[in-house]
Image 1 (cartoon, rainbow, N blue to C red):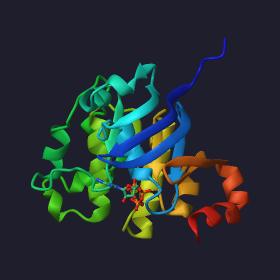
Image 2 (cartoon, rainbow, N blue to C red):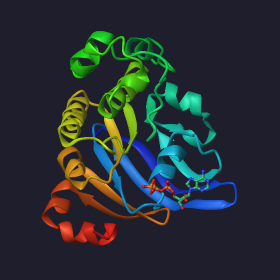
Image 3 (cartoon, rainbow, N blue to C red):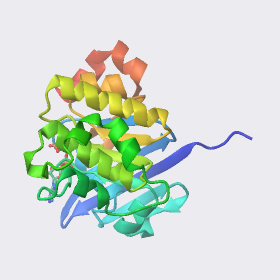
Length: 236
Ligand code: ATP
């Protein structure tokens, strides 16, 4: 029997902020070990998709199954305990605490959280910044710390919202390295990304969002061999 590698199944997903209907029946699937991006213009609903998956947006309907659990009836803190970790665009680190403190205070612990030693191996820059408070870190270090904190929780499926935003190219490359290492460890990642070069360097597959729906899907090879098709969606 072939093992079903599907970890996340999203079908006809709708969600709302009060009266504003934002997701309009989005459908996608993510398998174990994949890195999948959500691409699309500003306002397409990418961040809302992440927040709806993570259970932060509670006004929603449709099918949402993660590792066999029905997420529709699962509160956000339980979602994290299932191993689904969310790194929001604003990063969610404690800016008044230093690096070491941020790392010993993970929000939720699931068995299998990454050890501090392993964290420092993956993020050597953080080791040297142990006693630096969050506000004093560079944007890249803050992003690394935000990812590290989620790994400490034991998350093995990570929702990453625009991790490269505002970062210098050399730091973007370093984040691509980290994602590659996480993939090698068997983690699964959904990435919201505007930087197409980073997206194609990191991901296996890409979904395109428009007006709260998934309107297209590319393998990484297909995207690389037909950039005009994605550029048309993005209005580049
Ligand atoms: P961006 O790259 O600009 O963040 P996005 O694709 O991530 O775009 P979302 O941030 O999900 O898009 O926004 C989708 C729509 O939802 C937009 O029309 C936005 O104005 C609206 N929206 C976002 N947050 C809220 C909110 N808290 N309340 C009401 N509407 C919101």
